[in-house]
Amino acid sequence: MASAAGDALKKTGLYDFHVANGAKMVPFAGYSMPLSYGNVGAVASHHHVRNSAGLFDVGHMVQSNFRGPTATAFLEWLTPSSLKSLPQYSSTLSVLLNERGGIIDDTIITKHADDAYYVVTNAGRRDRDLAWFKEKVAEWNAGEKAKTEGPVEHEVLEDWGLLALQGPEAAQYLQGLTSFDLRELTFGKCAFVPIEGFNLHVARGGYTGEDGFEISIPPSQTIDVAQLLSKPPVQLTGLGARDSLRLEAGMCLYGQDLDEDTTPVEAGLTWVIGKDRRESGDFIGAEGVRKHLKEGPPRRRVGLIVEGAPARQGAKIFTPSGDEQIGTVTSGIPSPTLGKNIAMAYVANGWHKKGTEVAVDVRNKLRRAVLTPMPFVPTHYYRG
Amino acid sequence: MFSAIRQASRSGSFALRAAHRATPVARVSRPTLLVRTLITKKYTEDHEAIVYDDQTKIGTVSITDYAQSSLGDVVYVELPQEGTEITQGDQIGAVESVKAASDIFAPVSGVVKEVNDTLNDQPSLLNKSPEQDGWLCKVELSDPAELEVLMTEEQYKKHCESDH
Image (tube, rainbow over all chains, first blue to last red; front, side):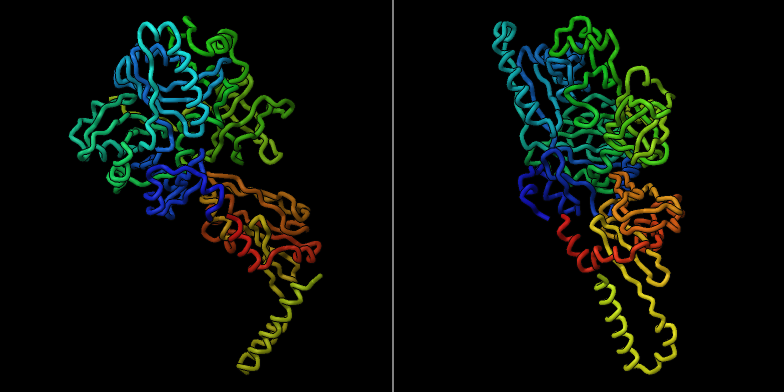
């Protein structure tokens, strides 16, 4: 099975742990990652997270700290988020934008203090993001504001572990391992939580639409914590279920549903742009974003339910008569929860309203599809 | 051209003779055994299997166990329509798991005589019994010689090993 390409793949600190637990390892974003474990199929694994709890290794993602007196202003230059008003120990979904307003990456930004942020970005964008951070930090620190008020430092938490514990039974399970009252930790909040002797950064949220936690772990403790968090009823869960869970929850996968030619307005992520930021427009890419805000985007990200065969990435979307192409599917699967074929797609502005009927080409046959609001499966975040 | 079939035929009749010599009792079943029905099983590179009965000229098409296990839970199967004329290599349907879609290619040319409608309601049969209950369609072969270009079980096993 080992090949030259396989040898070049990076491993998270849990590689041996996965193999020992019967994982089927596959290449993903430059890493060898678990697709599934033992003989548990992707569908059973998916249902387990929806009904109980699953543990995901997301240690391939890039964890960073940004520190310094001008850290807030710097990150408000790099992203359109309102970070000044973000409360301490809170997280927000955000986007890194290029000069045209296209999305370089989507990211979760967590504010610990006005001068300290913890940022998680995608593994598949590691090289692009890190080069971008390096370039922009240098540019920022050479500027007037940094010179008078102080510079920004960027640190990558290399080899740190990141585990996502997700599902309706996640909170109960984690509560059994800590004296910290997890009821205080509502969706979007984070805290340093003592877990069986480890003091770990725990953020409430995730990529499944279920209640859950993302736990950041120093390299030397990652295996011990993974063992602690993967006892019954928690099941180790691979990338297969991760993709179907996030799609049911209407969440984007960078590289499929988002790219550098897509603005947050087209991507249906206008809500990540702070209201004050829309007016001030003092962030990279503001011009492109404001143009789309003002004139309306040429195309929009939508949800589809497709009859018959599942429509996958790349499937073309037509008017119901099939005369004119109006869009393309970016992600699509048969939804294990709904038993229907769900898809994320971009369609021409005007075709984006819910209930609109379109036709999707799967294997040279047009299939009827209806625009459906996302999330496809209701989310179950813990909001206290 | 018919070397594989002839070979099968030779080994088949040899086995029959051997059995006959060893146990005279087998004579009872001789009339049926003497009907020269040959069931040949061949495989494609795309992980379809076809079981061909040379008496009826019907080949039963399925996906292999290897294919179902790499696809994972099958949730949807698209089959050709009965009566469709197909040519070897045509895309005639698809098997979909949550993870991926996998096209089904016609292993041989001919006419689709029957499709396994049970799969519409129970696509998971493809995982449970890919080469038996989960068969896809029955094809009346227009040119049984096409089976020649397909792989034997042994060749197919090697193909799967090198498929990684």
